[in-house]
Image 1 (cartoon, rainbow, N blue to C red):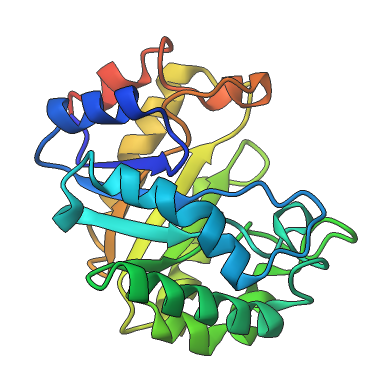
Image 2 (cartoon, rainbow, N blue to C red):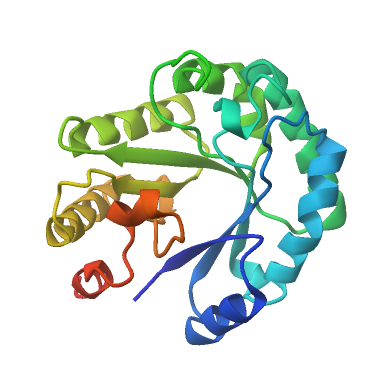
Length: 243
């Protein structure tokens, strides 16, 4: 019983159309997807390489209930840090130009500032998410929504993830939030326990009306690295659906 579904803009046409027909009354988060690699992608290139996919996906779902997340975890090196932008300050200008081009092409677009990889700085991997978001604060304020990514595990409790969320909510008191990725990513936690935790987390969100909704990671994935988080075939959806 999904209330919101997140899709990559590159998702298969037939799969998206099927989802759209099966779930006509849900919200949609569409992530403008692009594999950056080591490329210094310009705003114009990002729009050129993602816009048609986003428009195609919008045509297959209820576009009035769709929200476009522009990119993903830009504080990671693998997502453009150090090649397309140097830090959060630099990304803010890059993002602002992308948003302007998207609004020009899709005038009624509801744009989501992309969720960051949560955590402290790791050399050659990640810029600290708090430092990055503070540097890019004005670009967040220009967006319609703020995307947030939250994770927990046995050595990093759910309460810590909620503390990260509350920090975002304090920094951006007037900005509605979509949690566009979240999970217990610990491979040693049984799926039934994860389902229980996801319901507990969802209940916590009901006390935070600034949060519009959450999409857990991930319904399905072809990457075996994400197998401990996949819902399909592991009984999570059936348990959460009984809420």
